[in-house]
Image 1: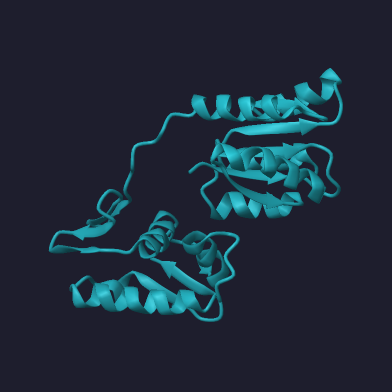
Image 2: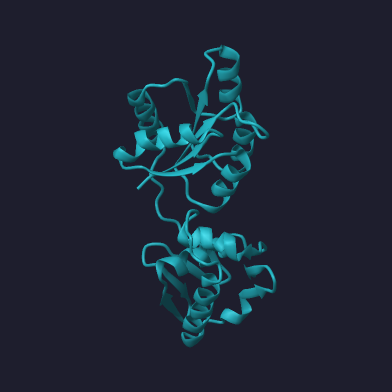
Length: 223
């Protein structure tokens, strides 16, 4: 299921866009400001962003600029004006298309689908480092002496930390990665999953203590 991030400071507008997209089989993540949007981009797999230009604080142009530093995800901008300058500026900053408010439901859906068709489906790519790797098809950690099959959540947590080995992830960040941004799960649940992961890998003779580090008071890091 494709996940669409909807960014607009008006609750009515994000709800309306979701109303149009959900019947088409899209999952929608709704946020009301730019900073929250960037947090979602950093912590979730988003397939397309629908971004309003006119927002207080961090406007759509600034958000688009920051998104492009983090991702190549398609960006569809919403503009309340038909003026060429605003459209050209958005496209220059990295937006892929635009829709003018008030927009037609069929046009919005068609533009979203057209943008998604331009993005090729990526082949699964594992993470390889220091003589071991993640197998994205088998959800397993594989090394010279063996392998361990991981649950979906375990795989997501290990994958995120292995991709950024010098980065410390907070419980909240790992919760968003493993359970989803809109999860109401207690962040301490991450601790029990990490504990189970350590036990599983230790029993399989993987030197987990060398790699998975607890950063007290913050979270976890893969070194």
